Amino acid sequence: MNDCSNVVNKDNNIVCEVELIDEKKVKAVRKKLPQDSLINELSETFKSLSDFTRLKILLSLAEDELCVCDIAALAGVSVSAISHQLRLLKNNRLVSHRKEGKMVYYSLDDEHINKIVNEATKHCKE
Image 1 (tube, one colour):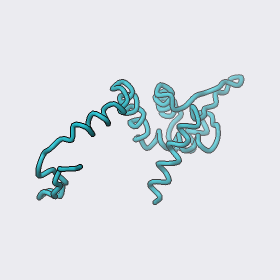
Image 2 (cartoon, helix red, strand yellow; image 1 turned 30 degrees about the vertical axis):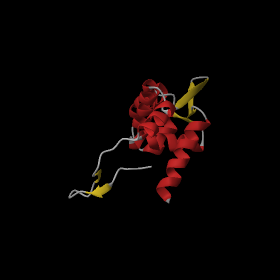
Image 3 (tube, helix red, strand yellow; image 1 turned 90 degrees about the vertical axis):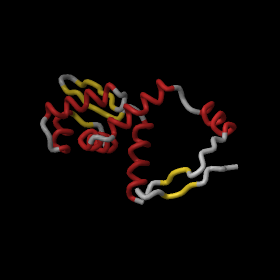
């Protein structure tokens, strides 16, 4: 039973008029929440996704494996700037790389990243 009476205040925000916590629900949900360390990692992942250039890199890599020069051309920024962004994405396990001779090719780290990007794109198109 939800005893929280929702109202809209003068700033057009939804607030509880009567504050009554459903302890049973809170305990049940708390048990299902991931540990704070995982929530922090998720937060860092979403921060990485929130940057225009990094998101453009991920969208490009969702289409094909690319070298730094290709990514720079697609993003319209310098190779140096792309290298910096790729380092951040790699640190957050969003992209991986492989070497072929002197060339380094980047791709999405795994299918999960592709799904996240595709689902967010679908959501924004709706």
